[in-house]
Length: 357
Image 1 (cartoon, rainbow, N blue to C red):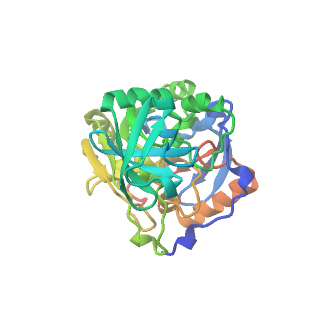
Image 2 (image 1 turned 90 degrees about the vertical axis):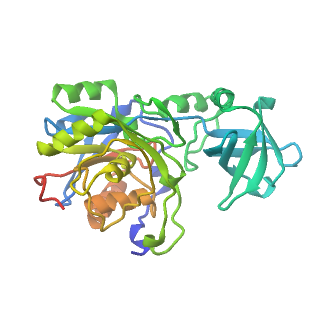
Image 3 (image 1 turned 120 degrees about the horizontal axis):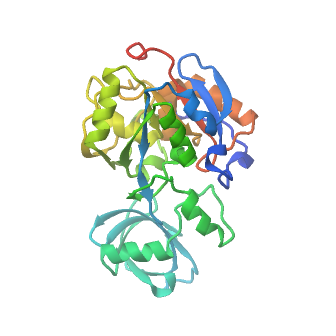
């Protein structure tokens, strides 16, 4: 399938630069994955849209302050930026760098007025470098927590220093626990304690997994035929209790609701041919696009995604490309807020399990 099939027009002013004043005040577009019908709501009403007995699966990964700002003393460039992607060996990190033209092998980079030093030891493809830091992992984590910035996507612009502090809190789910993500699982940003209380009152279970959002999630698609795209692997962990509760729901024909595309990829990666989940830790490079047969999930909560992105392709695979793009067009016309700090969708499935795919 050609990548142009996942294009849509989005006015730049609809890209949310700030989160809603209150998390559950975000708007919610409800889409039926089979009929294509949609309606407008707010996220505070989300629990009322679920069937009692549903199982909601959330991703409890925690974003770390992976964006570092520093300088290269040997260069005339006053400011360099590094986005840490993953630790490849002790003290050595793969990172996206800017500006790439000055980040040559052997160059020293200083962060936080000398609190942290690193050296570029290898140049990689797509603007990436290997950087060797001058301290151990525990000390590096401590320093990053002090001098790092929330790794906001580039379409979110920041000009005032005070915004960085609020971003540390709002670019994080309220249930984030396990450090390791370089981007937030944004579908979870809308949840509040009040939402969880309403879910409990409606006899709706909430279970957790960990999928560390890495470069693979937002990696751009650089091929015209999407079948040729490959997603870089990301690590996930599904606890035994989570697998048992999801599998019990499957046996009892209760809906499984994934909160975010990372939950989808983890669950689908861990599902057997019958859709039962295997617990444990693993890596996944699963790329879900139209034609994929879902085994593990029935419904999906997700934000609005960039054109031509693998995230949009996954949503189109789940609800049908025409249905999704029609709903997106409505969202544009009705002035929904898009992307990480924007509004969200709930893709429902009113068809009885076993007849959906």
